[in-house]
Length: 220
Image 1 (tube, rainbow, N blue to C red):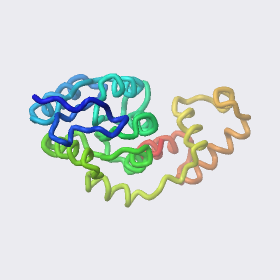
Image 2: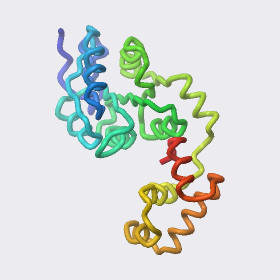
Image 3: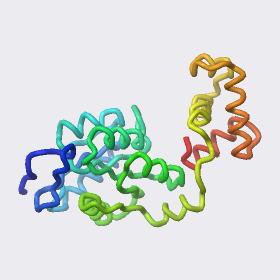
Image 4: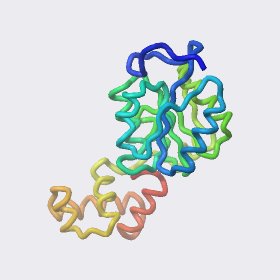
């Protein structure tokens, strides 16, 4: 297997010129990660050179292995794949990012694109489709699963502000207003206002329903 030119995603080098495409795979479920790595390893021009199980390990692994494409699951400990994508976009702008998801939540697609991701695919896509997406993003194309794209358009934009999302995320574990105020360095009145506004925007009855709706739509 031929080697890529010296360099990494930080300076825009890639394996598109006939060398091997070096891939980082971030997925917290070991069986899924190993299966994806094995399938991609069958491609003659793709090599999975790094695997991590946490979102907060992605940036360091991408730097040390000088990868060209990062495949990121959304749901990971440490930080989400979308948050990791934003870090990669800021620190290694030449590196291409493919987000993989089990859930076709419309808000996820919008968030992924805003984070700088180049592709958004479902995990159960055929291996050939995933390999093709790796090659396409390296060639400068954007790849989005058409079903997910349609769902995102139908779902509309996220109506919640950053602060409302922050308060809802913090409230998801059942914390009281006093606890939320302490953790978020806000007054209890401000916490109540944010929760009330979020509940009203989402047309639900209480904070528990607001958290569920926002999560289902990929807005948290």
